[in-house]
Amino acid sequence: MGDALGAAGVKLPSLSLDAVSCAGTAPRVLIDLGRCNVATARALAAALRRETAR
Image 1: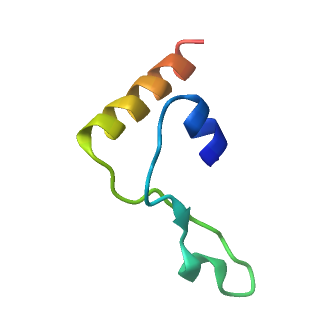
Image 2: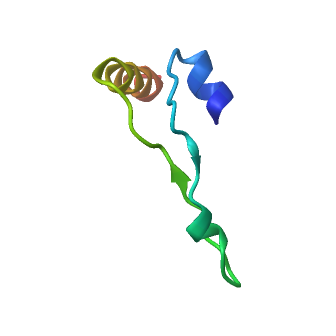
Image 3: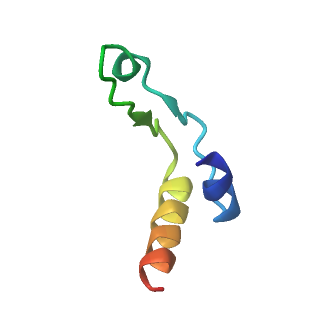
């Protein structure tokens, strides 16, 4: 996922797995996108717009 975001020009510094969601008998792993600055949020929104315009 980090590679795909990087290819779209987006770097989320806090990108990680949510450890609590990995526990249990039938884990449902969540990805913690973390915090980012306004420029990164705008870059992510632009990448999503480009993808949905395809």
